[in-house]
Amino acid sequence: MTVRPTASVKAISAPPPALIKRFLDYLFVECGLAGATVAAYRRDLCEFWDHVQRRGVEPPDFTIDHVQSHLMALHERGLSVASVARHLASLKMFLRHLYAEGRLKRDLASLIESPRKWRNLPKTIHYDQVDALLTAPDPADDLWLRDRAILELLYATGMRVSELTDLSMDQVNTEVGYLRCLGKGRKERIIPIGSSALRTLAKYLDDLRPVLQRDPSQNAVFLSRSGRRLDRTNVWRLIHKYAGQVGLKDVSPHTMRHCFATHLLAGGADLRVVQELLGHADLSTTQIYTQVDSSRLKQVHRQCHPRQ
Image (cartoon, rainbow, N blue to C red; front, side, top):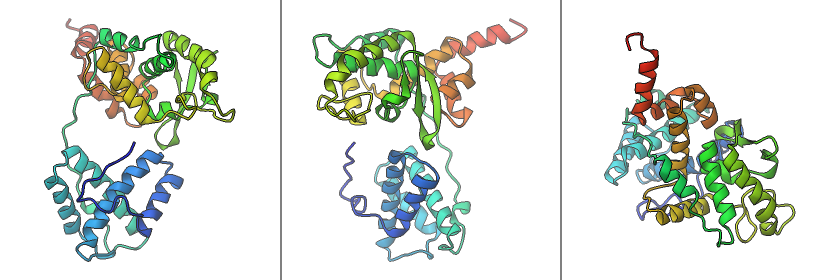
């Protein structure tokens, strides 16, 4: 996806300075972070670097005041609390890395307290709306089978859109009905595929993908009309298109992930199973889905409390 920086952010498009580049290499090679995550760190840190450069400051002379003034500038620019918190998280890791390399006099990261922020409840849609969305692709369209398979698979597995577009043929087993997903930090997890999604996916792989595959060496599962690997922007656009056709607003690939988790929990799934399927490192990240469906909480209370 193309990022269009505002006029006040000049450093994003410029090559990162050597210190930032070394840190980004560390994140990608040693920490195993995904390319999209490393790119987000790059944007955040280049903005901070531009901020301190305008003030004529170089490490090892960074101070807490420089961090605070940068965060204040971000706030004044209209960034949300969540966005500012993300910038701060990037900065803390970078500053900790500089201190470990001996390029900072003090461990500034240990002096910075991350702000507590409200967690927005995930946006979901009702079961009937999901059904309408999944059946929106028109069989008269040449690519309807691919689009239907994408929609079905997102809802059936709860994958992130980047995980879906990164899928290669050797990661999918339609005979057994599972796929191997590489999530954040290149951590692998096994996800079963529901029968409905499995039928649609198998039909796409048998009937349409061979038509789209122009290069025999191309092993991506989902291909564009030109035979290339489908990217996240394409998937976002097709979901936005079909959501509009069935009268839904503000539906994204991540909405399907939220629906996957919420509907599983509403159906009685164990929270730790959902955590494993989503690839969450921390159970608290998964627990937010229990707040979305209050009926699930009432059901558990009725079943488990001795005075019901």
